[in-house]
Length: 141
Image (cartoon, rainbow, N blue to C red):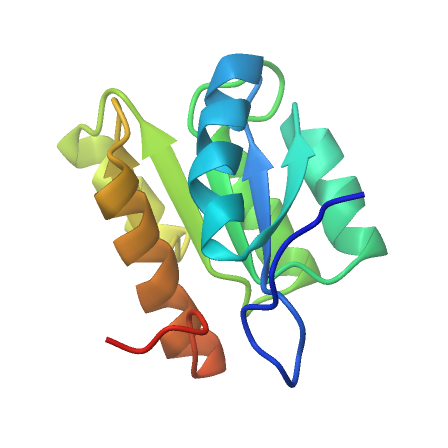
């Protein structure tokens, strides 16, 4: 399916779960991650994200905060019930102090502000991969 370069020769590419109810946002994040050698898995809802994490290994989850039914924050809490060590990054246009506190309580790894910046997304994902798995990409700067 995905033709990606190997990000880590021993373990294969790191898998990034991108969850957003907006198709253009999912695709924009995919277009940032795949050229860097990451495998991407796309979900259009929190429920779909949970099904994916139940079925396959995922190394980092990027989640939009505002989705119908399950919000990104609710999805983070449920994902952590399946995999307590999964780094989850919330993406939101309105990062209020209240939301940041709730994200911290839910043990979200980080909150990224919309509109997304390629540099910020990559930096945050690589930092999460290094912290949780000891590596971020095949390139070392």
